[in-house]
Length: 233
Length: 229
Image 1 (cartoon, each protein chain N blue to C red):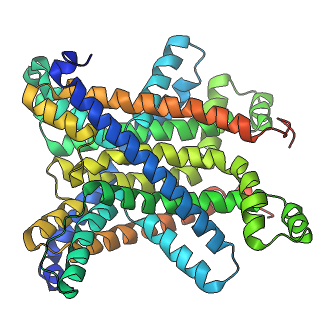
Image 2: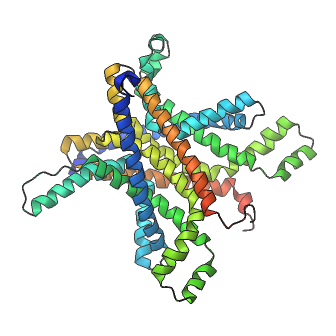
Image 3: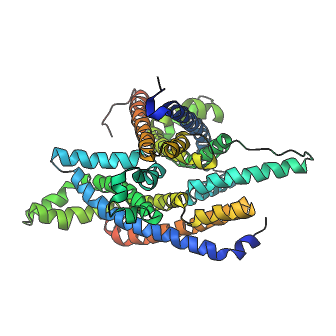
């Protein structure tokens, strides 16, 4: 099907697109997990947790994503290998670009998700939590059964914003050597001398990805707003 | 960690900071100059104008900045008529392409922010302007636009910080901004911590300075909104 598409590079581009999609979904999952933990840490009322979480979000917001990504990729490599050397092994370990990309993206967007979730958690009426505790639910049970399901509704607009930024940030992973769609496009563009064609394909891919996720988010918003009347404020 | 590498090369980092700030200021200035008119066009009653301004904004907001830069810097060279035109003198320069890509990107985001603020103008302000006998044009220039621009300052300050973080892409087209210098130092001495932590600290300093500046601007420009609170 892709044999003659894009001067024969169609299949390669498709492989790159798959990597981009898998990477962004993996990073989305982990960033949501990190974000939840960060938000709960910030709202826990424990001072040391609050300071750690605030430090983390401040650093991430102050530093560009590419710099963090390079730091994690190159720095992680050095760290792992010095640990291996200290343990007395004489092997060189290469960190896979996919791992470095996932870790750095999750780390970066975890902090943004944390802010989103913090706001959303604060929007859940306090009476809901009090009622849960009054029924004898523990902190964990209340968080998982009462807080998170209701908080999602308030968090969806924020999550969708972060998701769209995350998706676009995945374009940077080509710099640390991941064979994503951007890297495939640059290779194909160089060998066919038609860089514009390949980069515009990538641009359209991201545009389609964005629009597709907007549709999905619209339905998610609907689903999580069940039981709430629209327009009452 | 051996930070003597950094102290030996601090001049490079300072130069890199200069490039970063230069790119940031030039591209945000051009970006706003394009973005504000585009915001007005997005609210135009003319279908064609509305559609084209919306497509501009959707394209630049929906695709990664790196791709936009690559399209301009690497992509345009594909076409012979571009290479032969006089614009090629500019388009073969990485600095120009970087500023162009960042400015267009910034214009799209700024347009969306300003459009939001324009739409949210309190109706009373418009009615008051009409009641004072201002024409449509007068009330737009004197009342609606200034009021909307003021209210878009908080969102715009976020956008400028995103732009600062976006300037890292210039290091991908052979320019030596802070990230470019850090990558150079890392590849030369193989010392990722020193190189990138220094870069991260410099970016943090710029970010916090920008936040402080915008706080002051907000204090002055939005004082009337927080009055009595």
